[in-house]
Image 1 (tube, rainbow, N blue to C red):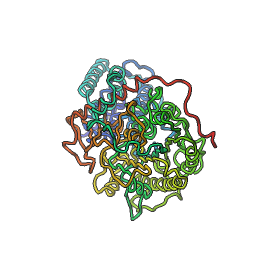
Image 2: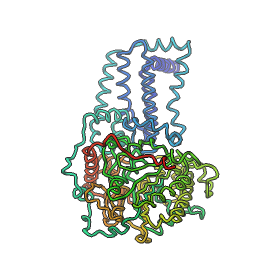
Image 3: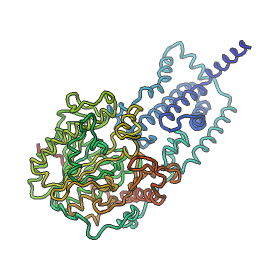
Image 4: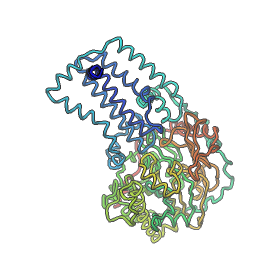
Length: 640
């Protein structure tokens, strides 16, 4: 009996070894299971076999049917291609929380420019999916194995069995794809279809399914305001022109989340300078990022246009950059302001050359102006940024007209590696070597540099002659990037589980000399609201400029559609962050106060309105006139 079992096992093993369609399918199934374990809440199951394997078998059946001499090579190529796709899915999910598609893969060149940030997301066990490829490569180039592999490749699978396998697999793929194609939630869609089916589906869906383009006649401010809810704008808005004629300085703080404000660890204030701003001026504590794949550059786009980012790509990598976008720089220029933007990275990074032309800045200052002194992240430190920016602002202030300046910090960029010697505080041991600890140290340093900036603004007289706004550009600690220890650290900070509402919550602070006094605003707001809010303070009318934000000084109800970091159909309202399931009915509301699940936090009308607002913004941009080929901002480096 035992001898018979051994013989059966040997025959089975020999049968598997002689049929690459079997062992390559098994290898890729294991890799698919790893991806499912990381991405989906329930992890891999027997259902994973029925969703991932059919697609793999279709490809392998085609190899078996048509290939002859180089069959094993084709298996290796397919194995490598699918392995790289699974690896991309893992890495992308770790930061963005959604399934990567070909749209994002088209931006793969950006990975090389943010290498340290990308590699820090890598869990070592992800590399296990490449082990088989290394082993195969080792044996493939050893002469004594070449003949064996050639012989294996020459063996043919029974054509009837092959055809039956192909038909069943194709039927299973259709069965997996069709019932799930209507789901709004991309992650749910990928889970129902299978990752590989989903990737192929997105390619064909984009070529066959076209979103409705809303006619320009239907896109007007009244229809936008009606979709967002609340009362129509007041005829005599509060604080209208309260800071008329003042300069406008917009400070975008890298990866700055709202929980940092007021946070102390071991008796050490993490952001003492920003804390003073929040305590002494207008502070909006229920404020949210509206960025997409472009993160920092998307924040620049949203704040300066009051438009939503495009669906599948960064704003700066989209057709949006071919349009003459209504914007804050153009609005301020038409009201007699000079405009400039300041950033220590190269203007080519994230295609800012096109962005600054599309939104109409007069001048930009980039790495060519700042040099590479005191390098942190991708350029000169925040200390250098602020020290070299204030004199330029003073020069602009000395002119006979006001200015609008955007200042973009960068030192606290993921993965938050501040050079030795720049740490200003000492964190408890449990924070050492963690993303959370590095993040807090980086933001503490960024706050230190901000303190120098604020002092220089006051010394130069700019503080008393300018409306100055501060906000975080995007989340710094994505839920998807944190390991269990780091999640425990965040739970210790919050006194509860760290969640979506905390991750997307950023601060918005407004300083207007002679106007603002200590006040905390509780209403919901987002980056898309900054343009109309500052325009109201400065007495600059936006009645003839389409904007999807609202003046937070005069509106107390809001609806903020979210894109990219959350599934399509997600939004923030006055009480909740909503994430759809397959649709609205099985979605989840997370309370903005404590991230608890709130059964009645949103309505289907708001869900439909959020989708309509996104479509309206997309349609509006598509129908704008093209930019002229000539023109664009000039480099501030000439002023050195």
